[in-house]
Amino acid sequence: MKIRIPFGAALAILLSASALHAQESTDGANPPPPRPAEGSRIVNLPSADVPRAQTLTLLFTHRFTQPVQDSDIHSLYSFDSGALIGIGLAYTLIENLEVSLYRSSDLDDYELDAKYRLVRRGPFTLSLRAGENWRTQTIGLETKDGFFAQAIAGFSIGSRVRITAVPTFVSRTPGQRFVLAREKIFNVPAAISIALNRTINIQGEIVPRSGRADSPGVGWIASIEKTVLRHRFAFTVGNLRATTVDQYVASDFSGLSPKSYFFGFNLVRQWKL
Image (cartoon, rainbow, N blue to C red; front, side, top):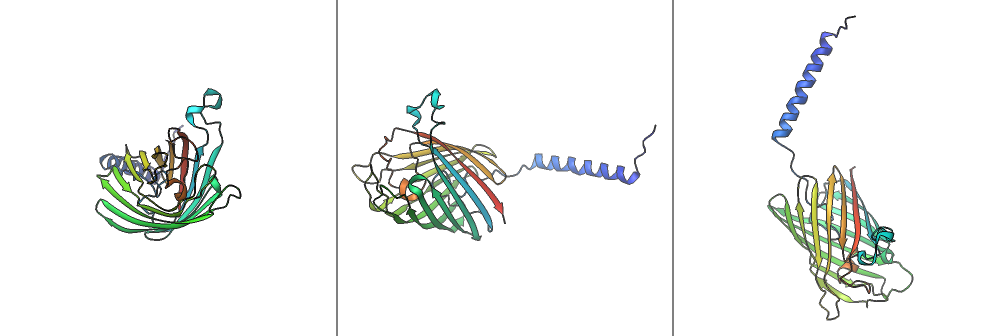
């Protein structure tokens, strides 16, 4: 039995195959540029970048509470422990202006802020960010709120590396059982982001000692991140569990040793509205 294919259908199939082959050849010759080595947030620190206008961003952060050194196979090396969980929403209202609301289960801390990109010229990007923290935990806090302001200066080296400094002022830190509340704190956290290829990045952040003689040590956190279209997933490790500005800026560790380190992850999803 002979099967007849109409001439029009055969021609359409041939044209489609030719177009697909041409597209594959073009993609091979001119692969798309790598995605940025960081999103609107690096790990904990803000990035100098702002998503495109009318972009909605959903953020989940997860920091396990058991130090890796105190865990073993029975606790799956801390993965069976409890966690400090953060949930945030951000929206780019207009070009260069992003507003966000983030809530961390650590001290039931709410963080409302706005970030505006002032300059994007060559390898240099400068943004300003300001906001307020409300700590709603009912027991054990000395202060309930605090204002913060940040300048975010990013410098790119080629298309794969960016170094960022984030001079930060916080009016009041929380103060709790192991850490006294402090006022008018200034610190300069910094970060580096490196794109290993189009979809895999590594990032590291450091929070220096905050200037007091009794400051326990330097805070740090690092991540390896996998990106796909409008998604970012980062696996983190570091001695900082805090994810809100008022808590990480003082590089305090809630009575724990700065030599303890913790696993965690960030998950980001974006939509263009």
